[in-house]
Image (cartoon, rainbow, N blue to C red):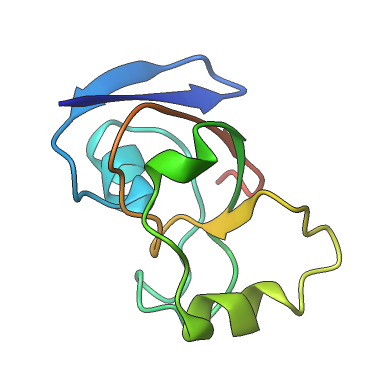
Length: 97
């Protein structure tokens, strides 16, 4: 089990490894946009990893391509739909519903 904490709400939960940040957020009522339904076709589920970047699976080329167009991208930006949890992380949701 891994712990995921969402900012700015401060909500924290334990999850099975391998789950995506988007799925975890939706299952727990954490506000997050997801216009494409989690298919890596947009950037609305943009998140910033505050702690535990190495505890997410590495981004693939599709995710990196999507992230490259974001003006507010940071070094720790990820798409919630593509970020699968391997360990404890703290996530700041950039685009809330």
